[in-house]
Image (cartoon, rainbow, N blue to C red; front, side):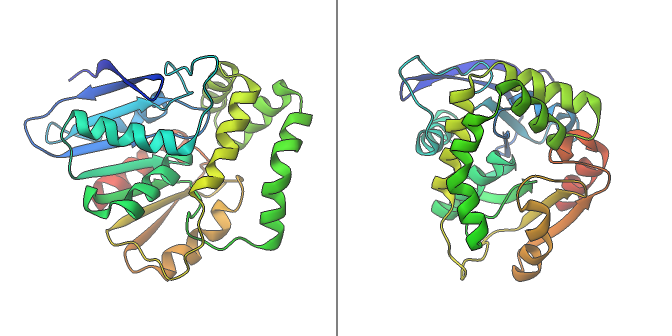
Length: 263
């Protein structure tokens, strides 16, 4: 079955999304990473048969969901977009699959409204409720001025190299980032600080599959993956061999197998 391209309006932005209908109430919602778009989950679509309704979007400020000239990206607006999409389809419970920023969004949805999530698949993302080291906090403070000092083409190239091992993935990331303004990309990255809130006692109330590329070089993601899973009885970790930050694109067969076994 083909994905149907649709749109909805919310908080000053036209959100583009893609829907594949099924004959059951089971929903899988895909949430892509910062700077990317819905196409990053192309290799995962075939892993789901007709028992699942599928929803993928270009988050506001990404892909086709362009922000108006005077509108800035905020994490809170993206959360509201998610709830609006669920309202449109009367979704009260879904499987969420999020990569990087999408994984941060998925965690926040589970944190705020656990009744809306049945299972969570987190791909190469950091822990929303984890404690940051002093050095990590300092790095966050310096990120914005450092990004503005970087030539945009250099930032695109280095980001692409960090995201993928294969040339196809790197080219995809370069193409996505090149469609964004540097200022918009930096706003997206800095807005992710809004989803970080230390809560050492927090444990996932629903089953969570944590996927991490063995070659993920983005932030502290690979470093915290094993301790994160070991500390939470509802969290299962699968390392994805030979994959970078976009492990679902670098090694889709391993990721799809892990997801299918988890579900």
